[in-house]
Length: 487
Ligand code: NDP
Image 1 (tube, rainbow, N blue to C red):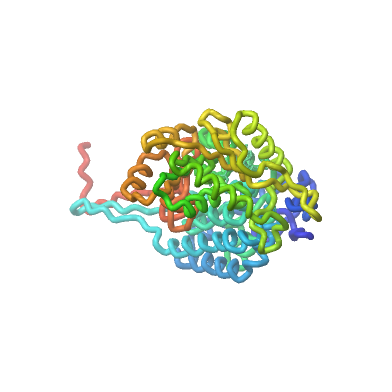
Image 2: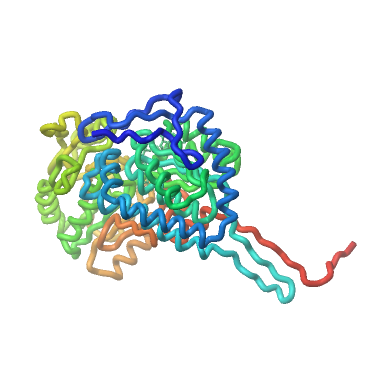
């Protein structure tokens, strides 16, 4: 299988190559085969992306919201029409099964372009009456924004960042993770096919140093990062030097609390969705599953049965439910955490082994894994694993569950399963997390704000809230009478 793009970068409305940049090999995680070779951006490529974005942004911001919105919505239509092809590319890039990518990636990107395409017509200031004099505000774009993506959702992350940035009249330079360089190039090409002026959405490839060069560039007004807490800390520190805007979508170790009155099938299904979807490589996953003691044995029994039935295999087979991890590095990290869990005394309920599948011996497969008897101090309960490893913990009462759920540096997500709705709302209100669910898990429609508290992040993606993070307010006082000056 090959997925060689026309060139490594997309700048000023066209594919651009510079083979002087360090090689980036795109590896298909199911086989370990190299499917494309790209090159990291050289300083010249970075400068041309910045210059093009600066020029493009001026043209773009001068257009009406309706014109901008029409282009974004047209791009959404093209993405939907090409869903299968884009989903196959997403599967090649990430190893996620086609069963998922057909419904969760390009389509989520199209949702974002549609939603923010519609918002583009309604990004307005306000009129403030001062009884004669008045103030009006303008909601203006920030300018040139940099988007830096993680590797788990390359199409979705590119669209979730581009759609609100562009709707507000900004330009964006997007750097995908070098692990998944392919999908964002398609997003750029489609946006231009839809009529986007050149320079408004540029893609440059590279490792962390390219991300850092973009994030610290004097002409950049905002950085939106999806990545780990350590990278977030670095990017935010450099942004502080120049008082630059940031949105940080970082990691998590989110709690999912299952009370003993919950529907057991729903709770097990939610816990599986929140741990095994995308082979567990989802930032908002509910990886600490707190189960109230009277339900624990039945919960673990059904969880083990249903987990063992997950179909692992060739991600291009639409019947397959779980593919490999994204890379050898990630496989080693996750397998390492399984060993840590065993050594810490957690009870392995199911899974835990890496797999060598026939015909895909070079793939990065690992079984979905459930640990029980996990305690709060274990590393598997404290550190983000980013793989299909669920920790089940038990609790006695509500107060205890809330305190233990909040006992983490992270605060991205949280979930509660219970039939007692007053309790569900009471508990959710006390959980320190930005994106929460009651009686479901991990649904992230574009209409709802998404993002974390504590070390999981700053700012929000999606929803009207994202508009706040890609605009700045200018306030204009208008006098209607003579100037009342004491001098
Ligand atoms: P990383 O933090 O390693 O990398 C994220 C991106 O930042 C990559 O493109 C990376 O490039 C780039 N980068 C690395 N160093 C720098 C730097 N100094 N300056 C600027 N950019 C830099 O994360 P992963 O790619 O490993 O993704 C996994 C992490 O992402 C997890 O912690 C996960 O929780 C989080 N995540 C958060 C989400 C959210 O919405 N909250 C959603 C998805 C993932 P390179 O890859 O070349 O190093």
